[in-house]
Length: 62
Ligand SMILES: [Zn+2]
Image 1 (cartoon, rainbow, N blue to C red):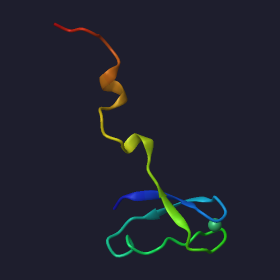
Image 2 (cartoon, protein in one colour):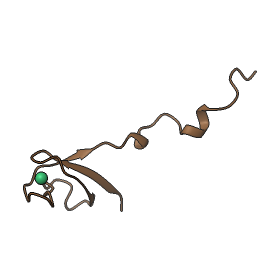
Image 3 (cartoon, rainbow, N blue to C red):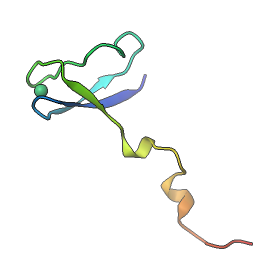
């Protein structure tokens, strides 16, 4: 089960939660202030477009 990061809109605390089907649509409660202001953070490494190892190396292979 994937774990996603959330940032609290109220106090800015970053926390992790399991992203299950049952709680996906529910607001995520901040563990610091208790407000349901958790906003999902999109991880940079999760973006598509090739891994870091694929870009480095030879250029212009014919
Ligand atoms: Zn908070």
